[in-house]
Amino acid sequence: MDALDLARWQFGITTVYHFLFVPLTIGLGVFVAGLQTAWHRTGQERYLTLTKFFGKLFLINFAMGVVTGIVQEFQFGMNWSEYSVFVGDVFGAPLALEALLAFFLESTFLGLWIFGWDRLPKRVHLATIWAAVIGSNLSAYFILAANAWMKHPVGYEVVGGRARMTDLWAVLTNPTALAQVPHVVGAAFIVAGGFVLAVCGYRILRERRLDPVRRGQEGMWRTPMRAALVMTAIAGAVVAFTGDTSAKLLNEQQPMKLAAAEGLRHSTAGAPFSPVPGVELPNVLSFLATGDIDAVIRGTDDLQAAYAQQFGPADYIPNLPVVYWSFRVMIVFGMATVALSVLGLWLTRRRRRDPRPRPLPAWFARACLLALPLPTLAMTAGWLLGEIGRQPWTVQGELLTAASVSPGVSLAEVAISLAVFTILYGALALAEAVLLVRHVKAGPEPAAPGPLTPPSRDGDEDRTALLQPTLMY
Image 1: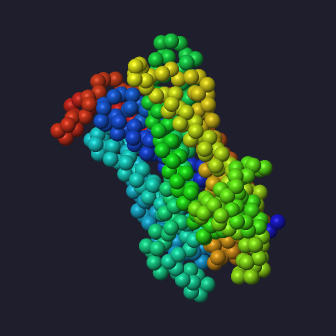
Image 2: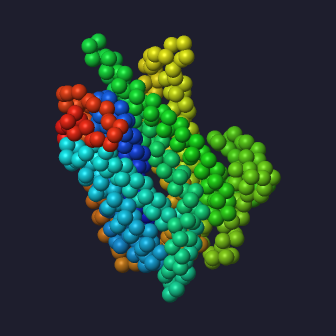
Image 3: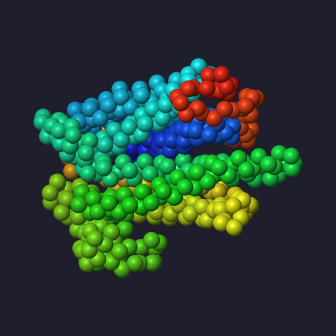
């Protein structure tokens, strides 16, 4: 094992760890903003209670995401200086836009939302959370555009061993980015929806174990559960559609990744797709990749020979078991979460003859607990598929991973930093888990006493009748 191997391990561990918080931040922020919008429109106290309850979970996760994201910046200079030199002129623009525009928009308005509960007019305070979640989604766009450039570099030229951007618009509208952004953001909403489902399922089961006086609170959890079911089902449709687009782009731009994901070693006309080993669906892979059931899909062995002739002798085949199984974990776990949401929509539907809510089966509330790990594992597997499947390239067709590592960093230095980050991240994971579990177990804090006045329709901010909620954060 050399410094390159440990540097790859370190970047993989820290990035996967950071990636656990990002999708939940993106989706949960929109969910919280939706709850506060419902309170603004209806004045119902339950929406205020839910806004503050899920808002605190959102803030815990956001803080952890910021802390773990900072480490990524250091690694570019510490372990991947050659990579940074090559991509710096291209990445400078989208990463600057992410930091100076999107992140500052997100963090500034999130701060106003946290401390503005009893200081800002109701409409202005609502606008702050929407501005914050818009900033988080813009941040995701710029980051994913930079990542898409590594998979399909466009709008650049190589001068003196460095990539120099010639067209910012081409970088930001890279077809790979246009497919990747809705796919990843849609998956983030599935992760957030699964998180909300798990929390609601746990709270419903907990309330059912309490005395009958408090059992009536169960009805409050059906509202966010129903909203999370709708969000997850819609996001699942978006992910499926954009996944189909991504498969066609892979066949054009990264055929090795496509072949590795299916374990296809030799070029095949009418290539089959195997959802699980031993089960093959004839012609499905060719159709998904090209729209033609008889199209030829190039295999890893044939592509290896072609790349060796084009780029020089090297091993251009990624880690086949990791790519193959990541692809299946992503699909199976993601589809299971979406199927759970569709089932939940059916179970919680209202009947025409009896509009009263149907009693939620206890088994479904328990099944909702699975919605916490399944979409997170699916999204992590998707990240592994995307990044490991690109190997041995850091920039497809331009820069090999072996040529990207810092030449002056020793094996011992990388090992020490890897050990420190692993211990630190373990402590942070424990702190995150304790905070989230403690807050979920405690349940929502009651709103301040007093009547809630629905928003006026003439633009008045209800200065004399608005409930002034106590500051929770």
